[in-house]
Image (cartoon, rainbow, N blue to C red; front, side, top):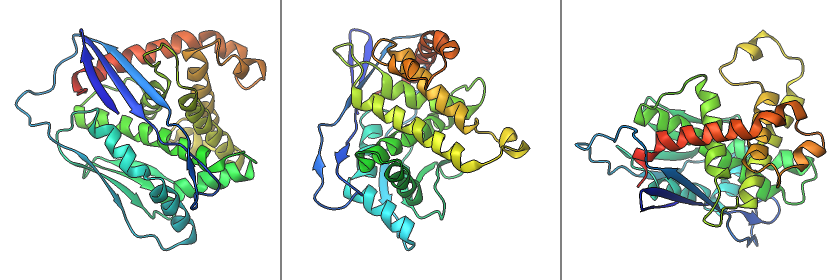
Length: 289
């Protein structure tokens, strides 16, 4: 992620490494990385504390793995330098008030989380392994690329929690919704040519497909599911599809024509995406390098 300031406009470029191969093993061939540009107009948002050092960095670390699932996920992440690239994207783009560990870890379940207690982010090895299993079972032509896409979107979701916590940003509504919005905002922003990178669009679509699969696995919904701080899986899927469509209705019209996104929701998606884009632009602008 590289940020530059030109004539009062902040430009942010995030580089995502998507490799084409099967099962994350050796002999992979790298595809051209998708480029995402985030442009935010100068605003009246409060500047960060000028007395703070803002010299923090995100540092990548891979912990040990012992279970078969964790080993699969760790290998997928390590062989693709996933955590290193994620940490670089933050270090090149955001001011941090302190060092932030980005930890690959065995969690014994698919998960990823921001920890406000020690200001660290964890990507569980089982999350990557589960994604690989999902896309393999779905018959995806490149399950490794799809799994890596979903992990990038997951990372940007957790980055949403991180910036809300570290910067004390407001989250009007559920923080989980706001974090999903940041992931979409970063991945769906147009580049210098005014176009959205298709690989980044696919990352959001792959992220949405995971929630569809989670819903299929979950069985009957009960009150615990409804009361959870996270939106329902299908709600998250439709939200992500809506923002993809809203970011470029013409290019992503297939989401409506193939029945993935209901027309009634699609009618509001362009305004919905513009609102989230404008909001995150204002909130992040003071903290971009």
